[in-house]
Image (cartoon, rainbow, N blue to C red; front, side, top):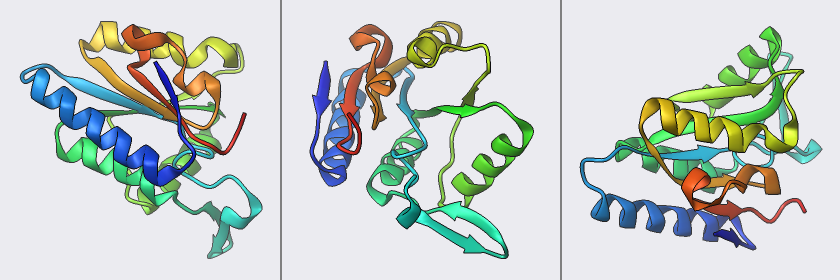
Length: 164
């Protein structure tokens, strides 16, 4: 199931409601959520950039950052899967930017040059759930590929309004 929501505030309310319901129905089981980075947790537009000490950072999208914080507070794993390239500088900058906006996570995964962006995220979610024995409750992102995979792989998909 994919929910196409027209605001980040609705996405936050929906995500927290889904996580609360899941926790009530599945006590003792490990749940997880998947979040994207660009256009989901961090603004990826020129208006979303700011500089500090000569370094450019991206501003947080507070409603989505709040989803990650709520999940961690309630022992739900936070998995971030991004199509950003898996280079040393990109990984370090992404970790630093997420830390600056208060996002803690259990797993942060990047696209490799050989990965297919259209299948990368669903395949990674399926592998993680199998290896680490948790169930994805929901997946949140601004692109269709962020929320693809169906209920058995991605949980409920929450498609944000910023992209097609």
